[in-house]
Image 1 (cartoon, one colour):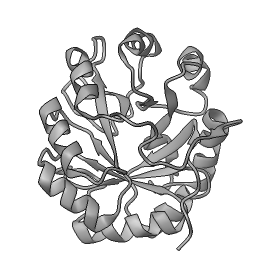
Image 2 (cartoon, one colour; image 1 turned 180 degrees about the vertical axis):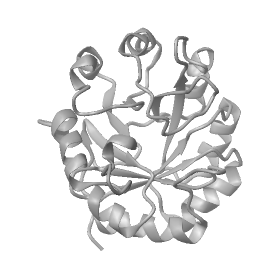
Image 3 (cartoon, rainbow, N blue to C red; image 1 turned 90 degrees about the vertical axis):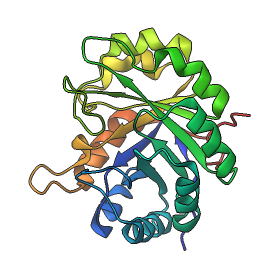
Image 4 (cartoon, rainbow, N blue to C red; image 1 turned 120 degrees about the horizontal axis):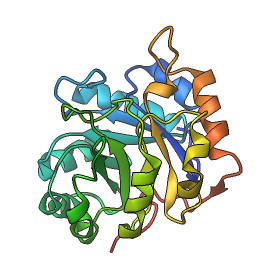
Length: 245
């Protein structure tokens, strides 16, 4: 098995792999790959066997596999992590801080917890009052993403407002990733955010895909990596990025 390469900062995570070909394309320029499980009705949903297979393929390709889930059952998630050997769990829904605390206690210590903070279009951050509680509960990394007008979350393709991101950053004492309609051409709009010491990279679904096939495209991923991750500096090879406790 190929050893996972050290995670850089900034890093590129591509989200929603469903086939071995997606893993191969991701490995041409990404550092992490999101695998959906427990996302009811999700276009990229994987059953447990598919999740285990793609997680193994990702590790063999030098990628960090990330479980992306709406689930809120700590014991079930911890069991899934152990069986599939994912490196991070990304809580991409409205799981409360108490659930994060329980999950941290149930997970192997080396597995990172990523909590999504949802930015409403034309509004603020849904979880803003709970950021401190999430950090104390054991969140290692935040991911800033957008919701749609009807409340849809996850891979919406909606652009993340740079001004609203900047407004939120003083509240964060954990590192963060950006998501939400990011493209190579959109990189200059986030210059101030990218210079923030907590910035760790981006999470992309739509812009990582070949428009003609809907699958991950090597050219698209390479363009994202060039725009957002050029001149990056390796950080210690530890999937939790920074300790939370």
